[in-house]
Image (cartoon, rainbow, N blue to C red):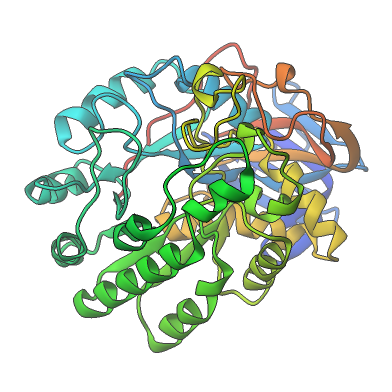
Length: 451
């Protein structure tokens, strides 16, 4: 056994969520990694020296692996008034998220070539309170940039099949998507797809206004279903890894399950807002709840939960897509014109656990969906579970604490939230990043590169 004096940190927890389940553990951390785990009350070794920092986890709290959120729009540089790395990563840490992977839009420039990636990395490095990785972007005309971006360390490439909402990140035609998948398959990369079909969207109603039902009609389930079929066909043809972003339409679950059973390299995520809200409960004019694809009906929400339970959906991530209050058009409540995006980076674990507990789902399953699974999908190494050799990233969670969300108390730069005044269950009380408690004053995050 190791000598405790060799450790930088020791954690004692009556309840720690390991891959095998919840156990009594003592964990020794060295150089930011989990060096040793003693189970069932065993000692790590000889008596600890006075210099070693010790964290004792209260009996009513659970030591969790730090969460991994692989779908975050930080928007920095270029639109830092929408969010920014300092505010976003503080919010992440407050919610128990110790690793984020940043989307290639809506920053300026978007991350569609190596120069843009280096610009973003330079902005992020001095501001990050958690570890940060980056997605690249696939847009018309940048196929030649995909391999260099991959070699520079992006975790994969995002594309849209419908208007992204920002002109500098245009969508791909289906043929371009397939061509890019073939290129990406040549180096075992992954294409992650905002799957709403342009042709279907063209035939859908255009005008919206303050009625949520009218907005819902502008983004029908069929748009997702057709786009997902296109992604499956392209992944089958090219052999590439493909990932469906923010699944909203439960109608697509059968074709997703069939594709996986066939051996298509397909993974799928959904988001807290699709698992919490229903279309029936959203008030007219409540543009805080606008996102694309949209929140759908109660029956659809329950089918998404079932898709998680049976493994058709792989993981839950935030799709944190903030903006200024002005862009949400809170004064007019026009769903058609308001910016689409819901901010939940700080709240995801509490939101999902609240709903999961109502359905009899164990905390271990929730954490797997929000930590190990997104780490595996994005291939973020050393993250996602409490295991020897992994980074010493932890969230201390009080699962029975009930509290009320107050938008003005969140770390998000723009303190508007679809969840304002909502009562949730479970609170993150402390976050540890590579063996150091996050103090929200001194940035300690590192920039990650895919290998």
